[in-house]
Length: 104
Length: 482
Image (tube, rainbow over all chains, first blue to last red; front, side, top):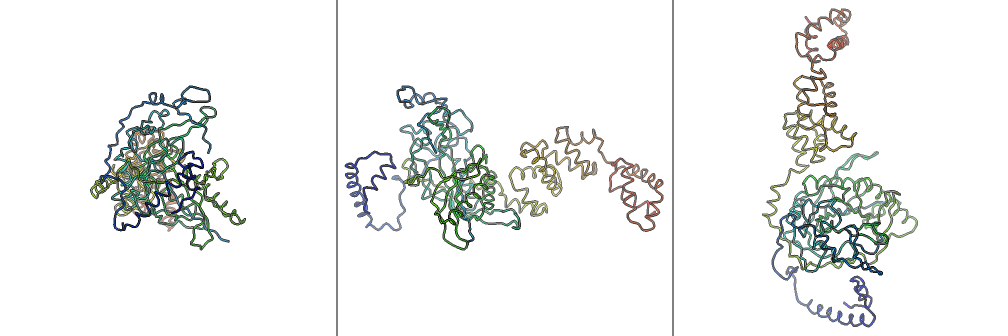
């Protein structure tokens, strides 16, 4: 599968990574190389093999449904980001974390 | 051209657990912002998810209830997108291998206009476990949005149907049935105001007879059945008009505005659906054994359909009565509690669905807040069948109990509602009536049957309505034939 520079830009945007033209071209070359390797691996017959979803052949341990966490909001909110725009205050108010306005 | 609407639903049900799906933080509704947001809910570096056993059991319960395949091995996946109420940058969900596979739910679509009521099977594509996101709060601080992560990590079971429904009525009948079922099996409290049960509705239209699906638009987060009806009807009209005007439908997510009754497309995000799912390396595959299923099965309540069949067989109730009584777990439990307290089944069914339901409806109350308990109703019905009071008097007692005026027997005594069942006393009354109405007696003897009823009426009147009507009938008949 051949990648285009647009694919690179789209993936970068989805991951919120800023990328310039030079880096985009370099990334295109590297990712194309990885895809070429995968193409090579596809020559192996894997029919009848259950796809692996985890590196370890174990199953998920389950936790009993009990509340074990206490309210540490004040501790956690000391790590909140700084408001910015000249303000050194933490971006919290009334127990809420503050973020730039979300418009639907 | 005649059009056909095609509808599929995705329903998010919050599961009845006390803690979150991947951490030990509380999921209690209504807490102060972020007081239930632990380090896992906040996605602080280094935290790891640990799956809640109860959430898995809820999923198994649902799978068993809809007769679905329950995956012996299912996998959690990361659904990647950026939004402030999702601090990890991905939602843990299930993608390729969901915990519950194909199943089915039978719905009853009520009669409307010329259309009779009918049953229909809605196929369930899948149901998967996932975590809820947090909430954005607007207006707390000017120019900013507030984030409350208490809800982040609340366990959800997302239940997805095939595009099997063909009208708003069918979609709402399905949503109501599912709403009853998840409450019946105790996996969701069904509280739509608090967001415990939220429906996304996919709507598309196509020329009638076509087997190709049209382009769909998804109506997000409908939290009442009334809004669901309005939103689907508006959306259907809008799509048909757009196509008839030569336009094209763009796949989109739309919101319903209850104030205008209209649907409106959200800001289009062309790559919004590129979630780049991949298996979450923080979680191992979820394995469910036959023993796990058997253990959950042993704790399953009798399902509504099975209970309906049992009520018909055991108590000789009509299909209609049995179906009404099993419409909700509360109603069914109330009915059974009255039967256990010694009430007669058919009579109980009539009172529960008649006077009691009417009263609850008129005061907009739930059965759980009914002032009259199942045991009290049973006691009232016993007093009818043992002849202590008449049906009419029972209605007065019912009203008084509703107003909290006391227990059945004390109300009967206080209001003097006890029937006269002493045959000596009734005979004395009838003798007086016969003596005072010689003309009527002659008419009866001359073959006028109506005169008999008039005499019964006179006797009842003379007893101030307290005589047992059946006894009055018997004694009067004997006296007239003598």
